[in-house]
Amino acid sequence: MKNQFKIIALFLIGALFLTSCSSNDDGASSSQFKVNGQSYDLLPTSAVTEIKMDNVHTVQGQIFDRSTITIMGLTGFNFASVSFDLYYKDGSPIAGTYNIGDTEGDNSFDFDNQLLAEQKLCLGWTSACTYSDASNGLGANANNPTGTVTVVDNGNSNYSIQYNGDFRKYDSSFNVTGNVPVVINITSDVLIQ
Image (cartoon, rainbow, N blue to C red):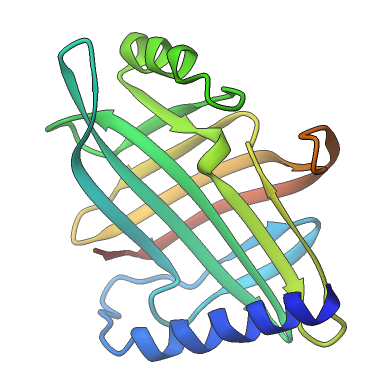
């Protein structure tokens, strides 16, 4: 298990540096975020990515877009990644405050009803937090965060992102075994894919 975290962390770090050949440093501000009490510096390039998918979900004739925003950082040998899976009405901007849909298992009915009512929603089960220390193999994976996440589009592919809550750790029977506190208040250029 310890080796798995070490291998995953090293692989992710290597992949990030290999894929981040182009960057726009104009307007980027360096910042930090916290996972489980540890501060992480945003990666020098492509620290925040958005994978945008148009027209991916339809509920009662309304079409929704989906964006997964991932924030990555390092401190020494420590690596952390936090992602939010955001749904919003097709044609609407990503900017806004998203409640987190706490749907369990395959119960998409609750998520769909909440998405219709709010028009913007973060899917908790597919939002994730991972942190590890490559020097000793310790770390954890968590998902299904609590609270809200806010995205501000500052223009020119630059976002401010705020979150202060807990991601939940689960056992193999999907019982909550602990929480991972996460605090994010960053402004950064975003690599949009």
